[in-house]
Length: 146
Image (cartoon, rainbow, N blue to C red; front, side):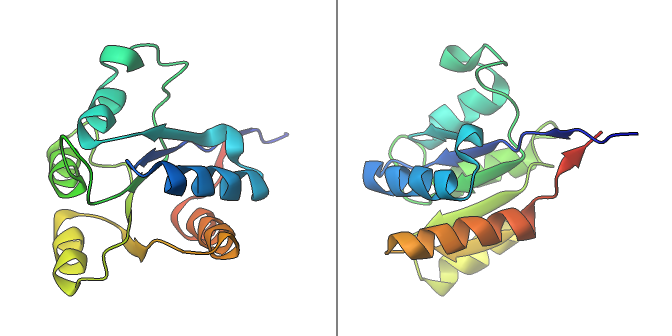
């Protein structure tokens, strides 16, 4: 019997347009561009995850297999969004990787305590983005086969 793998859906919450473009290009380079969705703040992230507002169409906003979360965003920052996600019974099983410019140990400790599965400081060079994306996929996701 042949196995069919569902596409991997990654939801990135980040307000930095340049970082989003770099990430998108890195996902394209890794062959996963179709699976990357981007929202610009924590409020939009929660709307997406709950199928509200602009994200009511589940075909256009499918449940993600992984969330990439920046800590410093307007309206609702990543710390607050992480707490909400991990305290919601319908969302808490989605792996969250914090991808941020912070190198502060207190941020690492907070995110680990709040339920993030990984904490990564954002790459600077494109080649580093590609390596980070490739590692994220290998470490944090397995192919969803049926």
